[in-house]
Image 1 (spheres, rainbow, N blue to C red):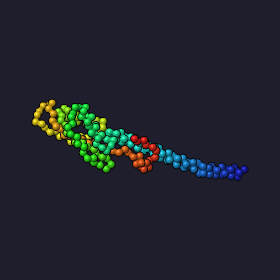
Image 2: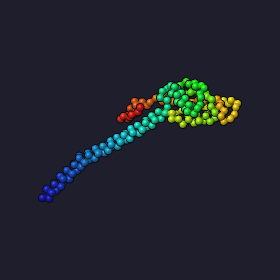
Image 3: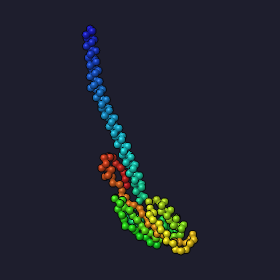
Amino acid sequence: MKGTLLLGTIIVAFAVWLGYYTVYRGQEAERARLQAALHEERTNQRNQADVAAVLEEIERYRQRLSPTADTSWLVKEVLALADAVGVQLTRIVPEPTRDLGGVSRLGLDLQFLASYHELGAFLDRLEHAPPFIRVDRVELIPTGRTGPDQKATSHVVLSTFYVPPVALSTVAGSGLSGSVNVR
């Protein structure tokens, strides 16, 4: 009976050992592999969300720029701002569009008559306008008369940029999957 008990104990111990190494260890390895895959997928999802958020922010900023690589948009915006403060433009000369490696610089050379206050209001409107318009240069040409209401000729060079919409193929080519909706 002692032999049978010993043999039974050995068989049970062997079965436990065999079960541990074949079933439990295999399941543990599979669980570790699944946890690593889950962590990697969560990281990918977070990265995709981050890329989508950055693309949306870029698109928001791009919307403040010219929608085309043509200066007519900038002329229209400047005319509206000039009318709002009562500045009468006497000369508008578009500058040649310059390509800056995928980004186009659009410029205007303006000349107008304005009082000191009108010039200040116009520059303030330009710098705080919803569309991005940069004042590159301001030059006042004195008329010889003085006084707060006296008008002087002002020469201003303005610019903005045209940035084409972000191509989704660039995002797709980066190894990120999923859809990113950019207008």
